[in-house]
Image (cartoon, rainbow, N blue to C red; front, side, top):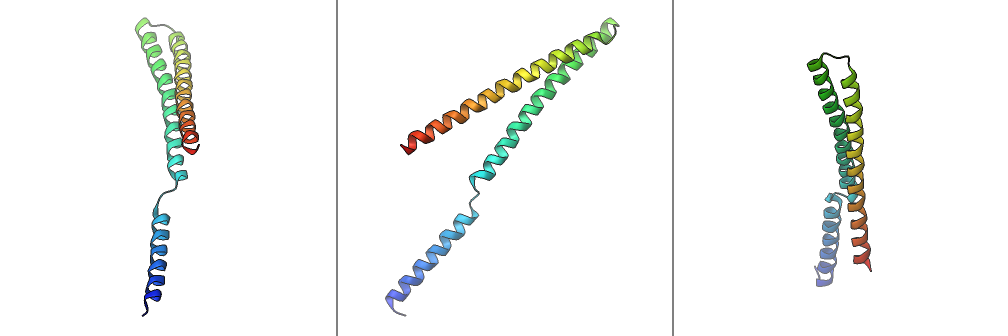
Length: 110
């Protein structure tokens, strides 16, 4: 083999190795998909936790006082409001983080 022939084969091999490494790297979309799913589950859990805690407190007060399910209904509604408020706070936090990342990306690009 001649020296230029070896050089050409070496370059082809390096190109194949680089392509194989690039194919094995996970794309940003897959990471972003999992991240979005985690955020969605976080919000669902916050809402359900608010409802569950409100229901539990209301039911406990109804049993304690021997009343109709007035406290259960009242505290379930309060738990729903608290869960929604917590969800909105989480969404705002996520949005602020996303905007900060986008601003940092724009500053790097400039």
